[in-house]
Image (cartoon, rainbow, N blue to C red):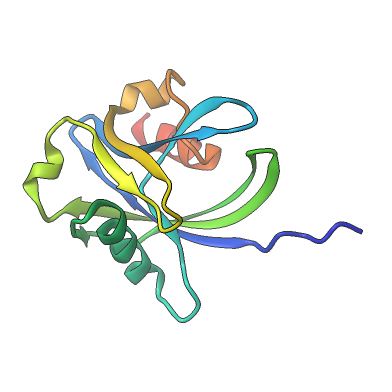
Length: 148
């Protein structure tokens, strides 16, 4: 029997400004397609999810955020890079402490493993009409129901 991967516990920043969402553009190396998700990462043992989202944004973007509400919690079953995954995702509504992050430009994001990605503002309508793929799928469904 194949050993199962552990369920991952993620904490992510849901940042909106007018009709824009702040996301990270990533690429599935097997499917060779792009997907977009809120910035954040894995909760470490002994760390609270709310502290994780603040730490991850500080580490990846070298800036601070303010959590402004209770998290949305979603379960996520997926395949990425050819591997099955299972996550429990906490999405915290946040805002940037530094106003320069509201400029409609791209930002370099560096993961703990040294990989580099691009963080950017995207138009929410591009997510809602699937012009760009917002993940997880459960987040997109929640967002569609919230907007409409």
